Length: 434
Image (cartoon, rainbow, N blue to C red; front, top):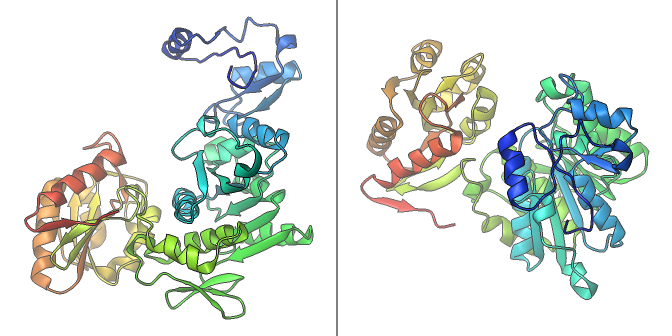
């Protein structure tokens, strides 16, 4: 293929095999090949490596003594072969990694760097532009989001800057235990020239401690006290020096985004950007679609699309980002419903419940806060917009469903798009320019 390798492809889905054949790619059933001729099995991240049980191709590769790797590992080896002149930033974490990846890429690009962003976000890492040659290599930066699945297939992962934001229970069906999941996440920063680690959870605090013992350079980030922390809407160094202001940046609203911004500041500063360049990049960051996305205003009412929040834990940061909001929630309920959000109900001026979960969510609200069962997203938007306008002053209408979308929409993206369309139809709507 393009990198000079002889490739044999296979997929459990015959339709995908046919598509590969149509593109001129050699295919074969991996049960029938001679594994003595195979240098490596390059596994797609979604194919089980260990849990709940290895895919049968993994068993065949192991029996033949063939290494099992992923696309990130191939990228890392190409970078090593080129002498690692081009900076490589790798980002992981249970939450916030997409926003942090996009923010780092945006700040670097805003400062004039040739940024190649991909991995678990946007373009696949092997589809990114090739490594630049000569003097252009220093201006090129790879910013790569890595899922735990990808890290598990990348034994040679050695970024110039590694970012580990947080670790909370997730993907345990794939990794078995939270301890194993955390250990896989740790690999991203274990060999990094600079390790940037959020220390707001016990697993990452332990990781930071272990890496500091190796005397590798580390930067700890937190919303309380660390090398970079949040204080009165600003990122502050441990010596009290003010590094960047976040107070008026709507796309970085909330304490969860403060951690993302702290990681981005540390990464971009390590790559040579000044605090002024980083601040300018922060201020121009549009945010990610469906993640606390500022859609626009009707008068003094701000509309925010957080459709990606498909469970209560994901919706909590959105609710805590506003003193008061008109909250649209519901869909296909997850276990526990919205009960974990009870500490934040006081921030809700009124709730508008939609979809299958509407009645269940209403029952959990226990009449502590005004609510209505709107049923459809369009009705919820119309009613919330009217109520927020009547309240007067600066108000926020927030879609943060705390539920899956599949009862009314094929995915959270379509749900978010429907919210944006409904808001755009409101009289007096003014979009926020990205």
